[in-house]
Image (cartoon, rainbow, N blue to C red):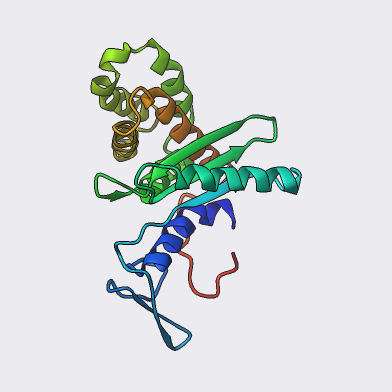
Length: 220
């Protein structure tokens, strides 16, 4: 899929597997969906779904990309309680960013929160330098107080680079990172860095301040 479609596609695939509502799908919240005039019974809302995705340049060797994709899927399936997705960002310059998150954090859709951060960084009102400033400041914060200071630090940097409208994206980043770190003690700095890296890349490469909803028949 296009990088613009990746996040809503992950959410739609999970909803399609479970049979739960999604803006891109014509289905109820009772485990049924209607597709091409036929009613299908799905797994139901108690089912979990885990996905892997690799973001790569078209010139990278397909075998390498597929190995990374399968590794991402394995990371998602080995997440405690599963119901997760794992992204591998394979940069042309070398190196990779690995980000694994549960689909829900604090009752909120993680792909939607990640898309909100991406959209803010893609907006001309917010300089993407906010991501670099935050990443450079994280090692300077005392580890024992990082969780307590993080919301204020993110809010300050986002507002400094993009004004008050960026506050919602800073709150989404803080909530997402802190929620994921609750299951991975000590991983908070890495989570903030990796979330920002993925969101900034999607904003830069996709250049999509809005994520189009996938509809039946949309090429993927």
